[in-house]
Image 1 (cartoon, rainbow, N blue to C red):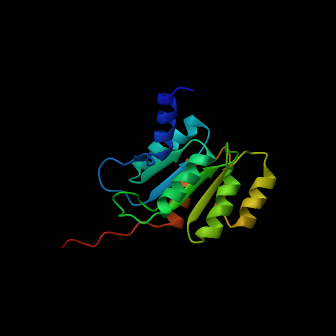
Image 2: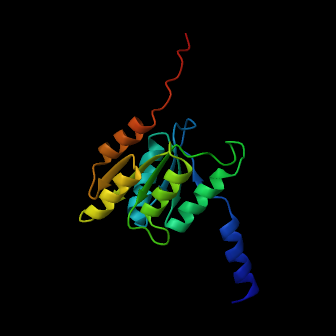
Image 3: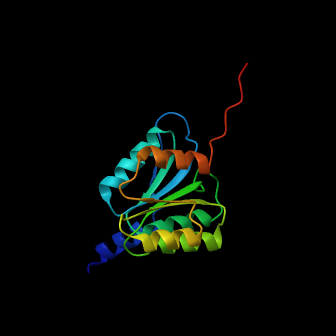
Length: 163
């Protein structure tokens, strides 16, 4: 491997997570979205953004865990936002969605976590419930249900009247 390829790989691992800021207002929730299915991840990220949320997405468990660890370093909210919600799919390459859930329950019991599983993976759904997932959805799931879960588990503050 050439020196430039090694430097590029090293730089890419040190780079801060890419945040997708919604158009318009600053957004209510800061969501970590981890899913290996590119189409689902991009669709959900776009949907969350259109709902006014800030989204940080990961294609595998290693990236998601790195973003969670990166978030734990004290810094101003404008630099590295703390997540209000984690939406993670199972299976996920590298560190699995269930391992991420287990990590979060050990380090941050209050963080809302929604786990999305395969339709025939009853064992993963049961384990997610035992680990304390906020909610578990099996594919195919209703987008409306997911958006309701996002709002119910971490409601957006209502703006004060301006009159």
